[in-house]
Amino acid sequence: MQRLVIFDLDNTLLDRQGPLTDWITSFCAQYTLDEHAQDRLLQVLRERAGPDTFKAIRSEHGLEPAPEKLWHDYSAYMARSVTCPPDVIEGLSMLRRAGWKVVVATNGGTEIQTAKVTTSGIADHVDAVCTSEEVGERKPGITIFEKAAAACGADLTLGGWMVGDGVDTDIRGGEAAGLHTIWISGSRPWPGGDKAPDHVTDDAGQAIKLLLTMAA
Ligand SMILES: [Mg+2]
Image (cartoon, rainbow, N blue to C red; front, side):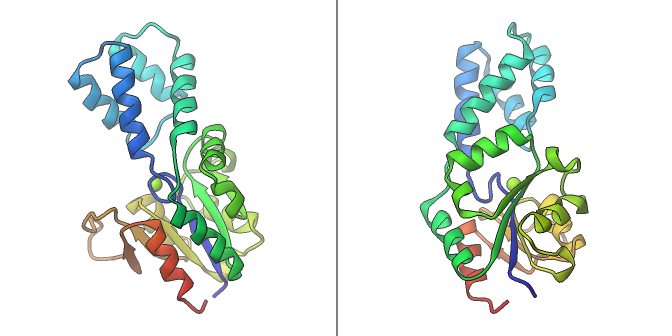
């Protein structure tokens, strides 16, 4: 099998949940929103966010600013706030030194996801980044996996690994794309039923250590 590893971005290589919670707290303080609104925002923004999400948020909470401004403020905050743990950055670098092709495949807008990859320092340690916006299809669709492999000079049909925290998007999607899978559990029990991923690790740092031990 070729040494190809495709990583999910949010809550896999970087922590999106921490900055998201902080952003919601300050947003609710700024617009005088109550705890119920805080819970709703967490629910709505947990999986994804885009300009349309902020149209819905603006109308649900009766906010004055244009949705474009709300989206811009949110994405600017997230882009400058996400971080990647030092052991993950070092691990990505070690994978490439060991001959792995390393690529990010992420569901999201190109502008915000690219900004996050750059701010967190990940951009310097991967061969390519693929976003669902530029590909025109979200995970678990197979196109984004194909494009991600091709973007780093690999061929998806020759196999590889998918590492991510999303059960359907990353693990089921990765399997359908013919990849071996590592699920980033964040200490959660596997919720996906009988067909388990090939491996489960708490975080991306441990997944990388595991990959480095494999003779691909
Ligand atoms: Mg994720």
